Image 1 (spheres, rainbow, N blue to C red):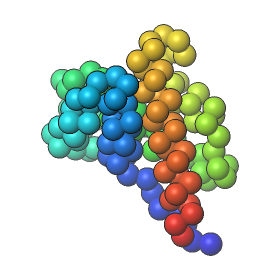
Image 2: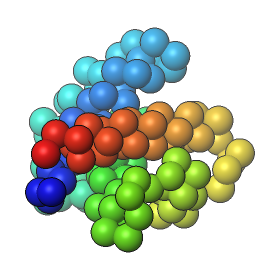
Image 3: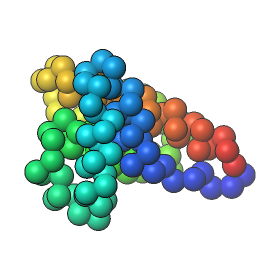
Length: 123
């Protein structure tokens, strides 16, 4: 069995923005794409001046991919609740603190779990 492909945090952010667009703001996919175009992953500080919800989606996707990579070494596959708790903690969000942030985190986790399953099944 080969090693699983790494998830691309930009693809996770794009997919989550697409999923969230109908529910939260139809402009989210374009906003997230603009942030990704103007803030390379090597410069996380550049997210500070971006649209706050779009920047939160991008930052959460990047953190989520790191969490999945850490967990996949110990668990196969990592569970939704575990990933969600770790991501909430890393992003500094208490459950129920903000419905928008909860929705974004839940969508990112769903996207990560689905993408992680596809990445490990593609080998």
